[in-house]
Image (cartoon, rainbow, N blue to C red; front, top):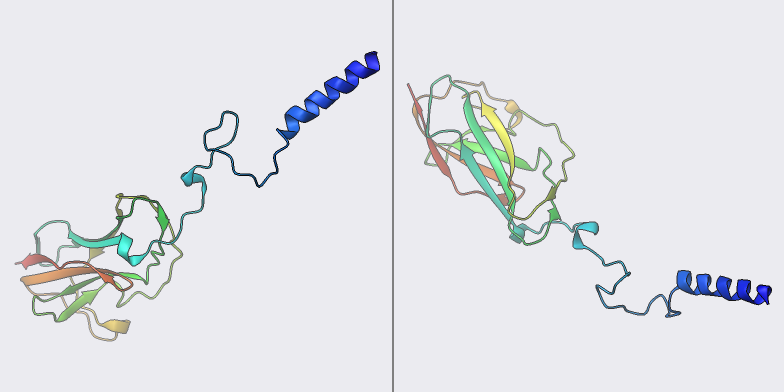
Length: 175
């Protein structure tokens, strides 16, 4: 008799551990008590499509003095409702300064050729900033031309992330 009780207890423990006997692939209703529920945050985020990205240029203030370091920023925001991954490699993002007529004055990528490995998870609506302090000197692609101090005048900053560009942001350099 005691052998029968031990066998029944063993069978009961195995039945509890193994579950109800449903095949593993059988769908289960989400939220069933005692059953794990998949949470979106636990899954690997997908790549952010261009349509879900907003790129903006920012200046630290509307005017800077000649010779003063000029605070600029590339700001990238995920506009989708889900977290996603985006390559923000240093060579894929850029801030360019031009004249209002569009003449190239300086770019954060002109004299900088180091690639970085930056693939953060971008949370919905949370901007990622990349601040740049520009010395106020001209530059050319490949850093081939002589660098001169920019004269007083009106300038425009535009941020880029691969093929995405921001609206132009005007600022002034004053004597």
